[in-house]
Image 1 (tube, rainbow, N blue to C red):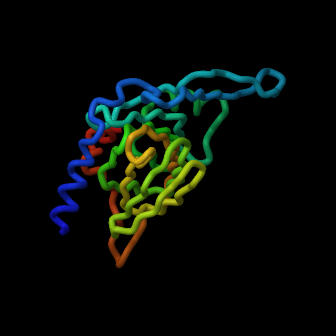
Image 2: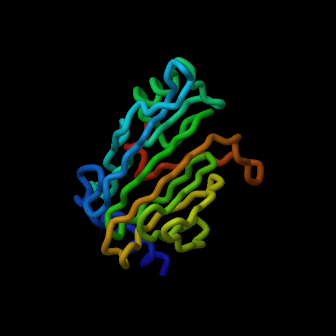
Image 3: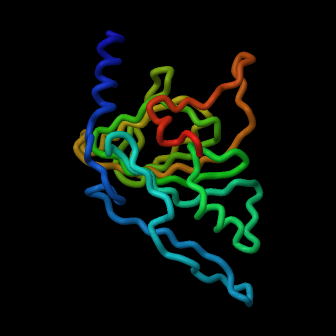
Length: 202
């Protein structure tokens, strides 16, 4: 039984290969990022309106990540546009030590992510579609548009089940750094598995 489940999961990891080659994914609307700042009088102004600076296709064109913004320190330094410079020049890894990442991911139909863990505090928000959140214990929850997960460094997978696995879906993830997570005296480590080539070295 376990072998059959593992085989089924392996097959799902290959689902929708070639579906995503640009942002947004086919079938999902374009979303826009509005970045604000201040004029000489200290009044708020819009500095840019765009799709974000960093896009990365994941898997065999199964998903695409759009970095909305990232910071590398807490509290963030907004003076002299230090944060803007960092966010533009640095595509973050899975999460940023002492910082934050806001990442939107478009998933192809029926895509199942690899099991993975970020040692961070992650808020996952379903923007469009329906997803199954699967933990490494085997526990599962269905998440629909507007639902939010608060992931406290648990290893997990995302399965896009929108339209019974026939349609694309979209989520936003906000990742905040946390102190080391210790379970039974052992510190949990980041686990990327098949995602490693998309996040290593950054």
